[in-house]
Each structure stands twice: as structure tokens, then as C-alpha cells.
Length: 485
Image 1 (cartoon, rainbow, N blue to C red):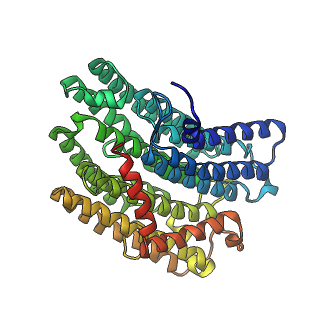
Image 2: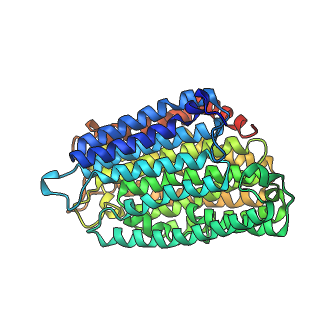
Image 3: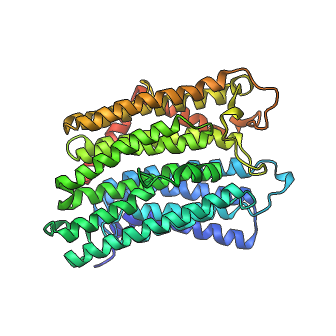
């Protein structure tokens, strides 16, 4: 196959991110400087985001046998790049604090790991091949092991890294076994060829095992046990990366896989996914009720949110693709805002991040604008009208109604009602009288720094999309059209 300029344009976002990672690595080797490393990373990610525009114009394009860059891939590439840029900005705010105390490790490598994981995510959303899926997933997962354990002098961070690595490796083993069975049945690793094969017992078993592997990455019940511990132990910006970039990439490839293969349209898989969805919604929300740690609460909340997304995946017709795209955009925005507040409140120089609800008691009386941001994020996660979260949840419910998935919709409504309680509990904590002593606070001038400006922009965008979601819906409709190409 001849490599043309349209192929190059389609591949440009991935190439720019990879080039940025190389430049960052060379800069670290030549001269360590935290601000310069952050600047290079931010500029590279902005350039990669701009390069999505020529990629959209060149789409759909089968760049290689492994990569299919269509509008579907371009939409999720843009979402991943925006989320990574936000996480890099939060990392700068997190590691830049109290530099005079001396960080016990090097700051700069965290940016390199984040860029490599971002490159893996871009491969994942644009693959049409099982080999590309595995390469992208491992390129995403392996840097995250190091990112989770980056604050190595904190025992919780090391424990979280080991747990994530062991369970992620187990999930990858299931995924590989499922791929081997699909190859044995169809003789090909390409989604399109496997999709043309007749559904056999071997194919059903292979898809089932692949689902186990992907469910580990999405922390769906019963493969969710790592989630709260890893979210709590990971540095706050890394937890934000895990909650957004990692999960968006895996869910996007699951959606493409689900719609390509004929065995997925059979009743047995829908029944299995229905049980997983109901369990994820109920278990995630019920366990979140018991948490006094904000990061663990957000971890259990993410389990429930991806249970909601399974409703649209199972519906799989009509509004389903649009619902997934809108919900993921609103979820990414809201999660970045929530973890962003935790990041600004936290520092790697203390034993743990500001994740206890007690640390946020009376925050309104100390940092009123930061409190407003966190309250807005809780409202959006709860799906309250005039927020982006409401638009996402509305679309998921609409796709469930269109698919007549009444049991799933019932569990979604019950789960959402439970969710409102613990989100409001967080909000009430913010306005209680402040305790006599508090160990954590955001800097007084937090809103004038890059992390604070990004956080305020996220809060404004959350309400703007809740009030006027049409620009997002127009983007999503173009991305949905590409799934049929």
C-alpha cells in the first residue's frame, strides 16, 4: 500500500504525541527543568489537538492494517487529548507545590509517562485489528503502573501500583486468550474479517474472555475490586487520568468491537452485559454511600457511571452511539473538575492526598470559588438539570427507552437516586462549620495559576453544555456517522 499525504494527515495526532514524548525524553536527559518539561508537553498536546482537524478531513482512512482513522476515532482522539492536556496541567499544579522542601524523586518523568499512555489511548480508539487493540492497551497500561506508584515514598501509592499491575496483567491474559480463540475460529485478527465469520461456540467463548479483560480495565462489577484502592493510592492527577483517558479509550474500542461482530448481536451476550450493568450500577452506588474518602467515592461512582454507559451499548441502535459519545464527554469534563479540586488541595509532600471528606469540611469559608467548582461537579455527576451530566444521562435514558430496556432503565433510575444522596453529602460537607485544625488547603491564588484557570474553564463548560449542548451534539452526530463507514 502506498503511503500518501492523506494517510499522513490521518496519522498526524498520534505522530505529534509520539514526537512530543521523544522531545520530552531528550530534554530530561539534557537538562532537568520542571516548567520547561510541562511547557513542551502542553504545547505538544495542543498541536496534536489541532492536528485532529486535518485528520477529520482525511477520514475515513485505513492507514495500515492495524489503524483505521475515521470520524469516530477522531472524536475520541480529541476527547483523549483534551483530557490528557488537563491532566498534564493538574500534574504541574500538583508537583510544583513547595519546591523549596525538595521532592524526593524526579518530577519530569511523570509527563513522559503520561504522553506515552496518551499515545497508547490514541492507538486504541483508532484500531480495527486485535493486534492493534493489544498494542494500544499495553502502551496505555504499562506507563500507568509507573504513574500510580510515582510518589514512591508513600506506601499507599506503591500498594496501589502493585494491585493495579497484578490485576491488569490478569485482565490482559484473559484478553489475549480471547483473541487467540477468535483467531483460531476466523483465521484473522481484523475486526472486519472476524465480523463476517459465522458465530460459533469458539467465537462466543473468545468474545466472552475478551469482555472479561476489557471489564477489568473499565472496572465493571465483578472485576472492580482494584478501583477504590488504586484511586485512593494514586496521586490525584494520575487518578484523574485513570478515570478519564484510560476508560474513554477502552470503552471506545469496546463499542467498535461490539458493533462489528455478529456474535455480539445474539441474546446471550446482551443478557450477560445486562447483568454486569445492573450489578455495576447498584454495587457502585451502594458502596459509594459508605465512603468517607472523596477519591474512593469517585472510584465507586465511576463503576456506576460505566454501568449507565452499558445501557447505551446494549441498546446499540438509533441514539446509542450518540448517547455514548455525549455521556463520555460530560463524564470526562466532570471527572476532571472533581479530581482537579482534589489535586489543588493536595500535595505529594504529605503522607496522602486530601481525600478525606473531613479535609473538605468548611471549605466554603476558606476557598468559596473552589467550593463552587466542586459543588458544580457533584451536581453534574448526579445528573441535575442545567449541567453537562444531565444531558449525558438524558441521552442514555433515551437510548434505553428506544431499545425497550426496561429493567436496565429501572436500575439506572434507582442508582441515580442513590447517587444523589452521596453527592449531596459531599456538598453539605463543604458548607459545614470549619474544624479548628485543617491540614490541607489550596493556595490562596489558585485561580491565577494554570491548574486553577483550567478548573474554572471546566466548571464554566459544564454549565454551558448543560444549558446549550448543541455544539457538542453536532460534533457527536458527525462521529456517529463514521461508525458505519
